[in-house]
Length: 489
Ligand SMILES: [Fe+2]
Image (cartoon, rainbow, N blue to C red; front, top):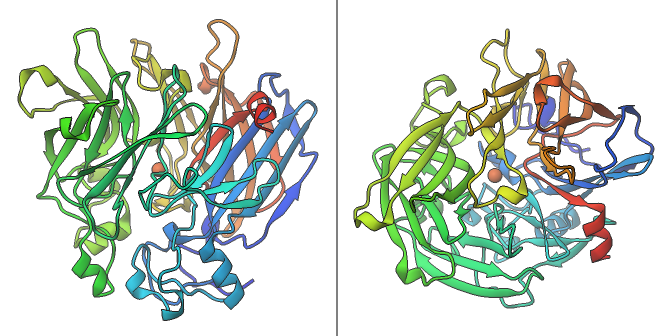
């Protein structure tokens, strides 16, 4: 194992794993529901080699690893492998890092000029019987869902023109189409955005390009039954800064945010740009939908500044989490009034990594889940992840009037983004699967997977599966049922 810097990006929960492994017959406490049959795929950044440059955004550049926790009758197993990207291959061959700062090829070693820089470390996306490891700075890598072997870079059968694909796709629950986009679609600091649709089998059926108002970090987007929504927040990129060896992103508090709205099967020339508040930032949307009156609503984890400390530093900002105005915000627009106004309503507390049932995607919905910090917690949260602090509370939010439910973990515990497993039982809200890390020493952790009744998260886990091996904080995950995996095999 190479020696990594003694900094928060590489120590504690963020200590690199550097190892592919597989575990069988994991110890189970409690009873796993029969409907929890399938695989929980997780994306983990794990740098194989120490960086040769100081880079605050280093956590984002860790080589992608994909893990699979499989639930079969009477057996739970876990496996993790690197995504064998071109970058991972050339660095492994050299035995050291060759790529420089996050999303800045001007800082790379000359021998990797023109090589694919993506690390495919953000979301495992399952669609059309394919598993894709995604990261927004490049094209996905396809991975075998059973062996986790990397099958190569994926470009939709050479049909995709965009050089980038988001890690936050949306799948319509009725048509099973995949809606996605890529920004900086034709190169660094570009305003070009590709908006794409693939049919239920994964065939790319539409790709249209439009210009964003400026080059912004577009981490997520949303769909409704009839519209595609493209929020633009002022975390921006500048080519001259990159050429000078600087950071990809700075956050501009004085700049307007926007919401682009177009018919989801329409032309990008029909895009309407509505104007949002200045300086706001969001990584993840919970959902979007149209109501009976024809209004369009977008529910998002919004803050008054970008929450990533290294982006604030690059921007000359230092706004602590408690003062960033974070909230679950609903933006409502009425396309019929001809104006560009957005109405904001606060519908939930600060938090991130929102989750909804797949069947609610783009539709009016009654509930969702969100990770947050327990305001009553004594002592600091577990350090880790890109923000430097891990969440310790899971909320179930009810938009139909019921009070929120909270599962607040004890001190020294951290919770990762859950996946939702639907139930076929009438009125049952399914289950949530989530990894919980318990800190037992400065760099010692005990990891387990918790299974929760999604409709009653406050009751705590109905089953726990121990993972007796080191883990690193997950970015995003995806649940694929055994039936879907079997159908694709
Ligand atoms: Fe994300």
